[in-house]
Image 1 (cartoon, rainbow, N blue to C red):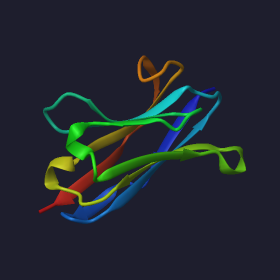
Image 2: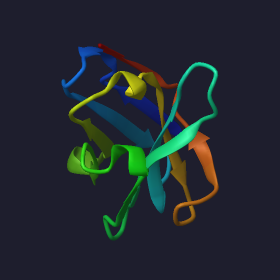
Image 3: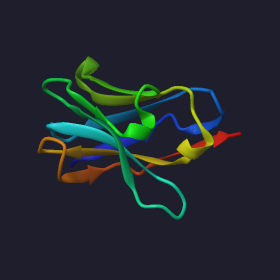
Length: 119
């Protein structure tokens, strides 16, 4: 059974940092990514990483502030999202997602974790 379990969300002041984690189990994936959805807005991709090459891709709105990374320490496939210089507009529910393709067809999703940035 495939599971993606996120952690690390919370409340932070503008300019602060948070690190999100997502542990994937049940199978391996070609790509893992972080999406977010703010109230009243569509879900958008924030960052993605190709597992085999560590190639990364970012939304323009987070370039230079967010970093996606991955490791498989202790046989746990984990993807991280380090978020620095947070802004109130980064407030959203953040979702971990996984795909068997490269940067498309995300068929597996975590439950989401709330990130709130206060001004």
